[in-house]
Length: 100
Image (cartoon, rainbow, N blue to C red):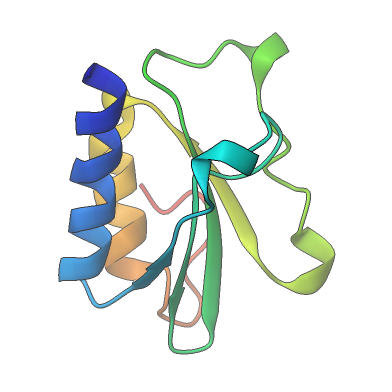
């Protein structure tokens, strides 16, 4: 249940900040797929959510879509401040990937 609450909290925040959130059907989701993709204006981000801090050797492929201009992020509950900062500023020109 902890994973579901974390997912709901982040997607609700994204929606409140004006993002359109696309979530894959869970029955077809693979570990390498993002938890959701969000679009705001011309900005597209892919987000992988984890319930615990992500170890370096278990980092999902956040750069998987970099060639298409989509930025990727991996967040755990410990990253809430960073997630909030990205969702508030990622659609603004000139904001770096590590805005938080």
